[in-house]
Amino acid sequence: MTKPLVMITGACGGLGKAFCVECASRGWDLFITDVSTGYLDDLSSGLKSAWGINVFSYACDLTDVASRDALFGSIRSSGMKFHMLINVAGVEFEGLFMEKTREQLRTLLRVNIEGTLEVTREMIARRDPAQPFRIITVSSLAAFYPMPVKAMYAASKVFLLNFFRALREELRHRGCTITLLCPAGMPTNKMLMESIDSQGFMGLLTTRNTGYVANKTVNHALKGKHTYIPGIVNVFLRILGGLLPPRVVSKAIAARWRTVAKRLPQPVEEPSSGLALDA
Image: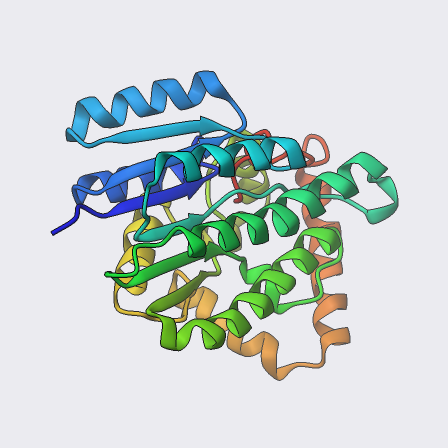
């Protein structure tokens, strides 16, 4: 039987590395990509040494069309066939919309939406037709609400949520399944940890460890589950938010962010991992 080969984007960030370790621990070979060659090389070496698997890597800037084309060309020329795709790559620029630069607007759209869709299309075309093909895409709990201060990010995650729900039905009879991961906070970098800490008890209550999330998400994908929201509290918040009018939810979130902003030492404004990892 062919050894599974998994494609992971945004591999060098906190959640991306957690997915790499989770898949490697199951004995699966990996093809990993991120914007930084140096980090990719270190990660590849570590995974090979620890788990004895094959790890292929290719540095790619998902904001750049030529860089994406080069990645896809390399994959095509290799003749590789894939069994799973894990779309982790994404960026977040937290803060008021009018404080964001035009470059930040472009970057978020190019990575979170444009890059994710192109990678997904390419990987479906490169799947192993003899085996089920699993797709995991990182959306967010923010996708279920109108989110002041996270307006661009939340909207991009709404797009992914609805797109992949529709794509799941298109691919249902082609041996493909799609699982959407919709987490709340995860401590994937220093700035996000500060943001979680600033939210006090509620921040801690809704936060989940990346290793835990990666393990549970892969289990859900192998069972063909369509959505995974880590944590009972987050599931409850999702249900509660769905019962309230969107304008009420939006006002409540805006009020909460005003409170949180007073506790932060500075505005949170950081890509999740260069151009790599979604939090």
